[in-house]
Image 1 (cartoon, one colour):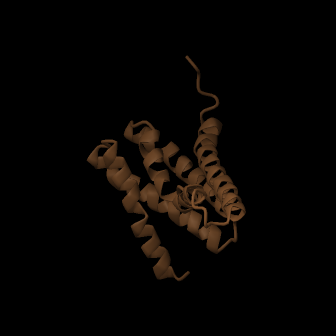
Image 2 (cartoon, helix red, strand yellow; image 1 turned 180 degrees about the horizontal axis):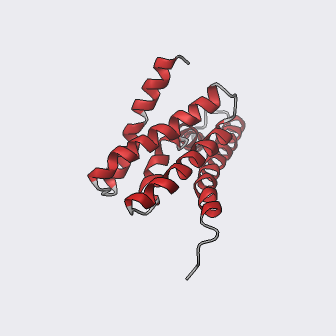
Image 3 (cartoon, helix red, strand yellow; image 1 turned 90 degrees about the horizontal axis):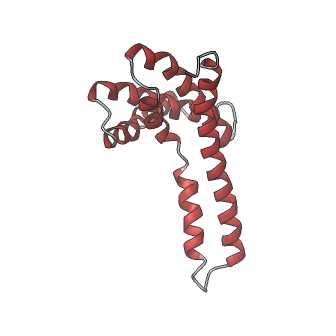
Length: 155
């Protein structure tokens, strides 16, 4: 990818993060940070996939770790809970294509003209990728918080 494509990727990946934050009534003054978070998450995943040849699962894990660490430092300064930023910022790296293909293969299984063995294979392949990416995103959000906040008192 060229630098121009990376810049466009950075700009356009901020949009779904902001829209998702607006759905959940995030205050307007925090929307630029959510946009930055979504753009950084998607750009870091794209760079990991294209430049470092990391698979989508590992790249999504790296992107979510970067976002989590970024907002571990930003959120307390603004006196805002970290999930206000991280949940909306992760939306651009959710694997929509693989989830769509998983459900499409289930729907096509009911068509008698389709090859069911290929559809079952597509269902499991795409379903495993979708589940793995979602687990990697969840672990990437949670792990930095567990490391940074481990000395914090429980009560």
